[in-house]
Image (tube, rainbow, N blue to C red; front, top):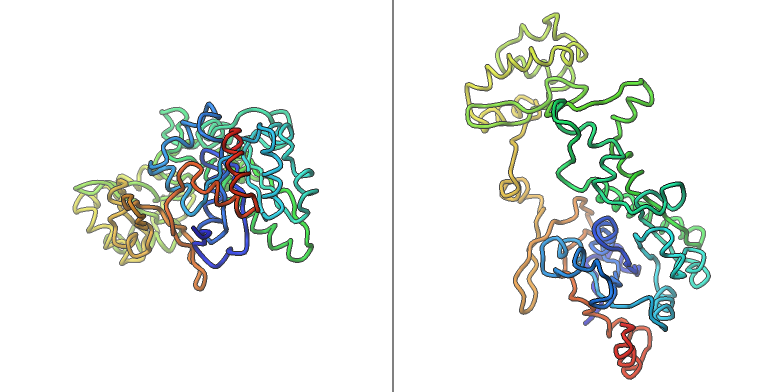
Length: 398
């Protein structure tokens, strides 16, 4: 089997993926979808007591979606001879990605300083819960813990509900994306300096970064954000409203949208109403505005209002279930879902990369690999003979 290159964009680069669960695989997925030769390095079956959490269900949608376009090499890094094989791979690689706790890589001898002695051009990307140093550095980190510590749960939900987690892994996914950005910056910088470097991201820092204007409001204005339910915390009318057959979102923030909304509904007198003639007043009098709008929106359907509002230049959209999302006409037009067949396997469906490049687009070219599917292939590329590879299997190294 030839190497997997889903795109020409990152074809020259080799990535060694030591990561598990979500943040790391999400980071590496960006690189693999844009054509990097990604080798997913994982322990042989039965070695890791937590393997059921991140590796056992190879055919499941989550594993497949995170690990498409990758090759798989099994390697027990605690066995004699395994570290030498890994360092041979480092000699050929551009990037190593890991999301162990900080002390693990040092115990294994896979810290940045050691890798750089083998290959000064290597880029090590480390994703952790709390960072590589500091009082919490060696704590285990999970997405929901970071949603709480990073402030997200304090601004999610309704004031009467108490803290609420977001319905997706915000800290994990953002840490993976920030790590991918850091890797790409390091690769560009290496073209000038000729040297690799250590890229570090944490779930905690990433989650706080995703809070963006909520934290910035506090830092600069002393405004402590709270839970606003389905309303926008600083704009009105902007949130969830009810038609006669369901709910939909509108985003009439700013004076221009407010004017268009009022005119479309046939109420130009609202524009200069003394309670509504500024954004600040519209936020203060949100409840009064919402009551007026609900009377109007109850007169017709979601589809009607979404069409009328958008035609008038006021942002609006339905509130979909996941099945409705993938069936939407614009979603289909954007190619958000890719169907990938494979020999002797069912066709699987994947979420594509949300950025499009005109000459070297990302692609989902292959399904996720079987456990150790490419072990012999990769070892052969390193120059090991069939007898040497067989010996590694016998000793449980691979």
